[in-house]
Length: 153
Image 1 (cartoon, rainbow, N blue to C red):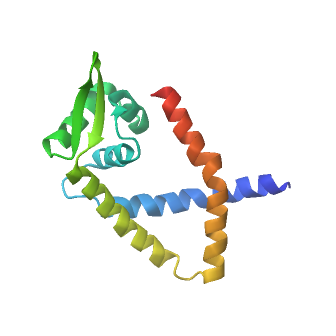
Image 2: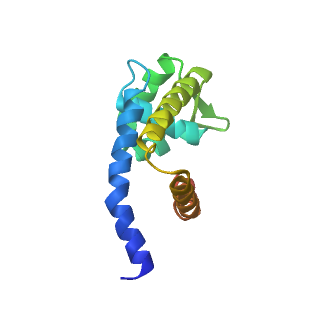
């Protein structure tokens, strides 16, 4: 088995479990009354301010009318803004408000603390290895994901 195949296998084995923990902890810390899709939309907008409604719909895997209703709920709660682009009233851009960003960051910080507790059994040297590995993966996946969203959105 090649080294890259071994890494791919490990990623496929471990990543879903890590992602389940992250999702469960993040959802546990979301602001009261927010649905999971609304919370996921907040996270998307935190990473992509000015995103279009269709970009949010694609990310959530929802139809445009459903996403529009979901965003209406965030706008009513003063967690997001919806504005038409000058020169193209059909194009709507979305962004977080200060309240929306605070709700997202609060849940993210609490989730980070929970993850740190999960990782407490690792030594400092083991933590350094994990950080180094993730730093190596970041340009292969994070930037690729952002580029794909830019061309789609």
